[in-house]
Image: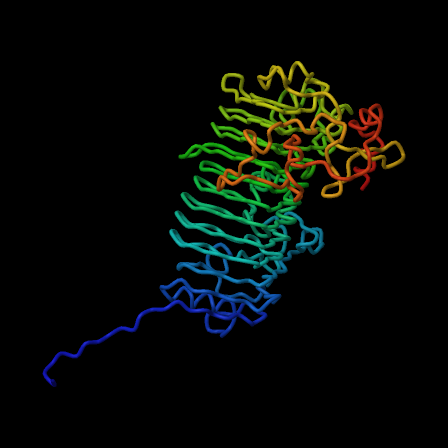
Length: 505
């Protein structure tokens, strides 16, 4: 027996659960801190779980073990995080050359060399290539970004809010979620609020609250508000982005293009209000071969927020003026089905003469395509008549008449729609109501993510009634009756008085 070899047996590696109860970010050696839990999970080869004390506010300002680029952590093994309503809280700040202190609540443009940095803005985590991550109910407030997905990784987030995202110390703002090649980002009931709100300058203009390159986005029952990066609430280059039953308000637009993979964005049963700031590039756009397919969705833009340019300026810089809210160029295609576009104030002279609101070409030698399939309603403008739009969108049956949404009398000669969810409902006597027949059969609305039928509108109301469906993302609701037709027609052009009020504010 003594001569038998001794066998060294390594105990099996087992998945573990790590508890977080510390109110500070901590370090890898601070037991029960988030930094410690992540370090433990990274050191274990199995799929671990981190559970955070419910409602805990975790201060990240004291973080010291940060990695390059201001990231708080990397995640290199499969992991599940139960946030239980906890929030990562940052308080970034800097002092401007004007001696004003800027925080996440009064955001300014940080200018290196001129302004004095204070507390930096951290970002949460980078996901290593091929790693799977699941996060529920873990919020952020005042961070720079939330998550960057490495090549071939998968991240699924639910019940999560990210607000007050800022980019102090960076020329280009960071997306809250950024997906790299062949990664998959799944978002369910995720809320983004006040994301990179300062839009002035080239960098902020092209940063999306959510962005991806040759990746897949599945976003459902989520919302983006006050994401002021002008082109992008969502910016996708190559791959597929599915935005389903979601609400994008007071934000920049949507952008899709080809990359090494074809780029396709599918906007389904969703409502978009393009209204960031006074920007010349806030729009929905498809370019470089990208395809933006809009189904059963509502698009609204108030041209009061458009940049005011003279006709001479527009002629010298067509992109700055034309195509808001829709631009397809360089081989890009925007296709509408059972959807509508309403441009408030389109008749108020705010669109310079000769400038088209729907545009297919910056360079006539390489235009894009605007396509309208069945049951599509578009707002005409002073520079584009019903006949112009029917020709431009290739559909002689395109709907352009009538008042699509309910308008309220605000007094003083001012009429408009209330912000959703209290307003912007279809006019019960308007052109959108019950336009899609056999809505529970051949025209059933299908979720492109999993192929299931979509039974509720963007506000949770039944999607059909009497086997009929209304154009757009919102079914009729019990709201006050619309203005008389003459008053509603006039209300589509808010008075100059309202315009002065907004400028004064």
